[in-house]
Image (cartoon, rainbow, N blue to C red; front, side):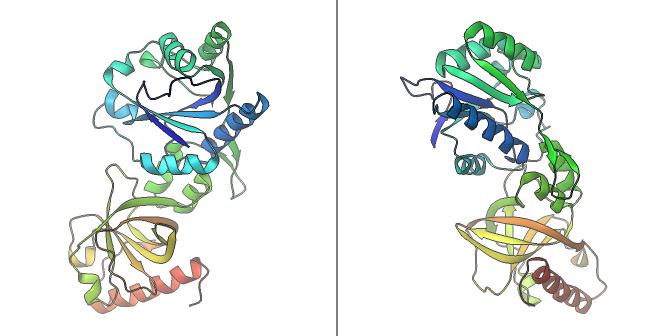
Length: 315
């Protein structure tokens, strides 16, 4: 997959293509539907390449500083997921105040027509663009007729794994994660939610208790699940190791700083300084303040047993 950045990122001589546009935070099942539809249309039009346009930073942070939503995927992770789906080019447009003031017609003419020579554009039904989000799918269709490309607006709703109708949106997934319902989040994402970061030195208390943990300093704006204990996977490169994850302030020790700590099962390596991912599979319990170290250790013993069961491992 080609990676482009900036308005001038498109290589010279780029030909016709099919385009899909959005923030794509999470690359969730709705996004996957959108990308699949764009790729299918590209095949129908003569095996054209598919280009995905996204934005960095998140538009809300530029338009309303301090309002950046919890981030489901880093830009690097987004690119990896999109590449795995088969997209040909990943185009990142820096979202600035100047860019926010571009009129819908200018957005379409400069980016979709002059630079990409789009034959078709596939977006979500609620897609908006241009100054004050004045452009919508109907406007995109009108401009497409004028400039010679077709427009498809998709409704991103389908049956979820739990047998219920799910509106696939990043907002819904963020709310599920914030509530600790990582299984609902995984249902909509099509995979467990991942928190990425570098392993840093903690207070080493887990080691003293017989449960040494990797303290993961999450990336800025990362969507962190509600306080509690979770079963999941500790991801390092291509390796995924079973792990019990604690999210919270360590109330038993009157902690003040919220942390993500992973106890990697059946593994004794020190992961300090490594960049890793933590995949949240299921919630084991909420965060509890224990009256004694003995009670805490007993609870941790139970957490590990529960994690093994949830991950389908022998106890």
